[in-house]
Image (tube, rainbow, N blue to C red; front, side):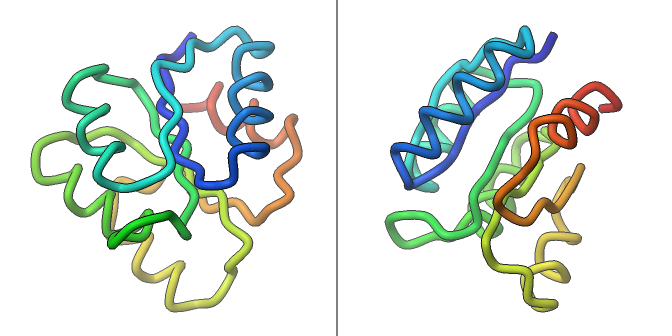
Length: 117
């Protein structure tokens, strides 16, 4: 079982992701809506994995947030996004990318990715 940080600016999706992860047996250490809070949470809560939306509130998107996190942590990330353009995929591949999933993400797919990590 993993300790997971959820970074999602849509509060409904954040609650759904949190619930699904808990049903899978994982612990959600925190759920935040922006990059600044995600960085602080990684330092404080030390998750095993990040579930990251690409579009976030604030100045940084999810990929920029992971670039900042990678300066002090080697934590893997699963990106969940509605944006499947090639530029996003290329930028995401330069982080500690575990998976790049297009919304809506099927629970079975998410569970398999997490189990294999």
